[in-house]
Amino acid sequence: MTMKVNITEDSLLIEIPLDENLDEEALQELHFQILAEKWKEENKFFSFASEMSKSPYYQRIIAMGKTALPFLLKALQEEPQHWFTALGAITQENPVAPAHRGNIALMTNDWLAWGRMNGII
Image 1: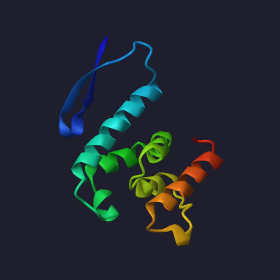
Image 2: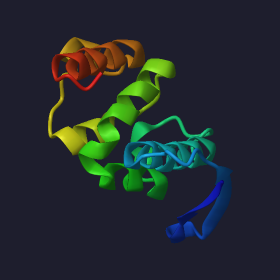
Image 3: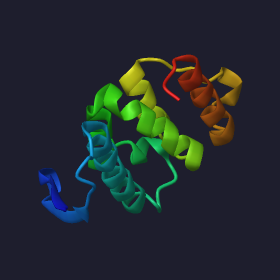
Image 4: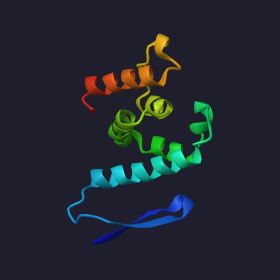
């Protein structure tokens, strides 16, 4: 079975073979992965988190709301990136200790601990 996933905001149309038993969560994760990959590609030369978070792909991930939380935390586990602005925007929280600000590894650990404490991961 082939399903067409259409992300209309940038006229991206891709065809991906999918299992016929694919559920809504898996489709949401696929949508997140596409946006995250586009964001990473677009921002590979930026070093400022404030610039990275202005990306339309990043903003669409934020717009996914709480649906994106497990995918964001999983992405942090796999490869620490600047997902902190998105996590804060969605949760309205900031579990990063003041002494950890600016250190991606420590900020990642704080957010992953938050995710475990809240039963998301």
